[in-house]
Length: 207
Image (cartoon, rainbow, N blue to C red; front, side, top):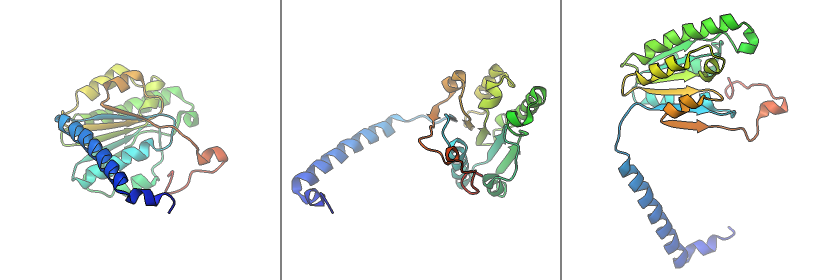
């Protein structure tokens, strides 16, 4: 293999050990500083694919630890996705589909607003339940962006949740006030997307 011979030289081995030792010291110091425990608020935003998939990965992780999880899906009105089919069968799982489809499908402002407010009532119950360890609020940014939900109310409910309850919020264009409150904010972006080439959503990948 090209270049592999240099890695066997004593000097190269020594440099590698020194680099890894410095890296280990930095990582160990960061771990030592992280001495707090609390319920986290995570926001997954941006135009890229994978926000909800990332959130559902955390759902799997939490269930693997025997934690109780609640999922609330705004906007999306379908109940035939692979993640819902799988997670609904798991112990400790509560799943709510709160939307009636994307707003450009319904085209009814009053109906969309009422659906969002009714859905938030479901979320409020989960945010007040100390027995639920993780709450995923999927596509929440849309009801906030369109003004269907009061931002002050949403932020207040998030702040008032049980101290050790984790919350993951997904959706494009997360409002700054929500990002400011969050402990972790991840912005995803597309480098390339099959849909832009005319390829429809694929089962097991997108659905």
